[in-house]
Image (cartoon, rainbow over all chains, first blue to last red; front, side, top):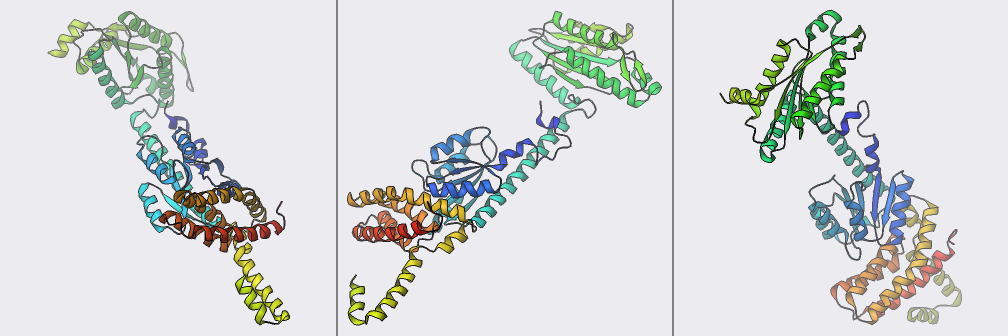
Length: 333
Length: 141
């Protein structure tokens, strides 16, 4: 599930993830500096993880929930701060870590080398606490900005692929998923099922009971379709009241059973709306792709559409299966 | 020692006493600039006390490392031990000892330990004075 899905109304910077930007890793072999850094940072309400050497710091920084901000002493036995910066920047994956390198005042060249190795900022010993505070603050600010950007990006990505009303995949995304699954099916020969479903007489519901009631119907229909399928099946909104489900690894008999389960789940229980209880039915067209099937992405859509059309023509509230041979020919023609 | 005996032979006892006091005060600030160290930790007396205690309990070990490195002609060892000492001493504003430690770090880096023994003696003397000064400081222990 996408993490932005439940974050509506929350300030992206202040939600639970931001605690990671409030934790600081301190790596210094000197007990005095460890103590100064730890007590000052704790006084300013940061959480502190303090270690005595570069190896321990490296171990912690590789963990997925590692602090996002690290204060690293340049001179440490074993793995020093400079090497740590290099190693961390070498990693391509993972969240950005803000690295504050601490070096002795007398060596300006250290600073240049440190920044080139990937440090974001530096502190020179003996630093005073005001400077420390300012540097840590600027690091936190950058991390929070980055966090906010990341969340905005995730939110946009989610919105670009999901239907605003129902929260399921939108038309473009479900078609992409269908294409991907059809390709996978041709590679590995695993069965693949496609269900196309349409709410019967939906226009009449909207016209008679109003759009809010229509929206409630759509939401409830989606909820029942999703509940009737497995967690790893894909359900998308194909059109206004038309839905497409992509069901990988499901043989013809099970696919038919799923389609029938969906139909029955809608037909047997009326839907509660503000305009009262409404009895709704759903028509479904089903395509089952078995090994060696000749369906391609386009023809499978045609076949599902044709089966759905037959379900409508044959009285609605029913499931029709595509004739694979016929549909394949139609698709290839 | 030499300077002191020259003074005492040339000055009458009273003057000599006053001068010694001035010299001692001057020396004292060079040994430990307490105000500067306190400023550095943002005026936090408790934190400064804690740092002095950590220093007092930890520096003898660093001095032992430095002494052993000097005696065995281990330049890298001298550089590392002097570097650690220099960091702590400069943080505490122990001016005199900081400059000796810094000089010894340079000697180690350059691989020239010809005057390391003399510097080590000077550093030991300076550390003894610093120990006394920190020890007497209010709140330490």
